[in-house]
Image (tube, rainbow, N blue to C red):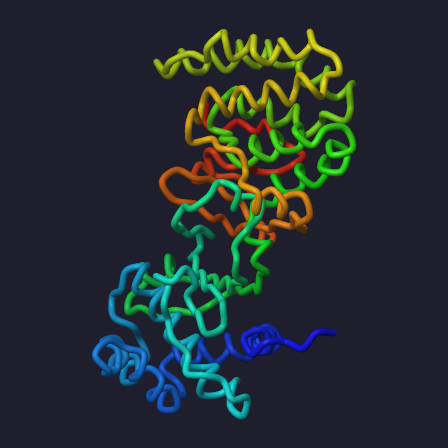
Length: 352
């Protein structure tokens, strides 16, 4: 086995001691054992002074009334102070810093931190649609807090209630990765261009779009001609019912062109060629110049990578990361509109 780099060694140590680290952070959030953390908190805080929330936490064992972004900063600071003053003692670890502007929260470990509350969601900068399948460059700690409950019951007493360590590739959409992995080898045996188009569709698909939602279910089943035919046979009725619902809401109807784009799959054989073309046409029409093909680096990772996403992801100007699945929660809510839900139920009503 190759020797681990210092960063890899420290990340492995964090992962293997995560229970103790979270327990120590929670103790700090209760105002306990803070004296030992003071030197690190002073070093990393703005101006070389203890952070503004520290005095109240130490004296009253509560936090000031902070917004969600500031709460995330509190947790990040404690997650630097606890390992540095305890977990890494004797390991020749460098002084740790928080630098999210560099693309990773803890650059000295190449480790990200995400701290969603009870809605299980965070928003993150959007760089490439292919992150939806490839994940992040860095591993990540996901720390679920009780902030939403705690802020409604002042004074603010915050705790981490659940936690997970995710590899970078796992910070990708679970359902879309499973579909991509299901078909990858099968498509590559026939035509790599088909595989590339499938990856592009899965990277850009938006379940808030009616045609995309139907195509996603067809793509999921495209190795099974009977399942594809069944999906397509159900679509005209679905088209009628969804337009009735839209009419009741005085909303614009689904275009007849969207229906015909799907029904046209029946006219071409092999059906996989028609499905791939229909999915790719949706990307071209809906995303226009934005819907680019993967670059060479992304393509090689798509062809050879693990495709082992464990979260839900949707995007607009930013990624919306949904960690419900990470913690075993699979219910769909209105907040998930536009995101893929479950591989077995890809045509779940998304609010039409």
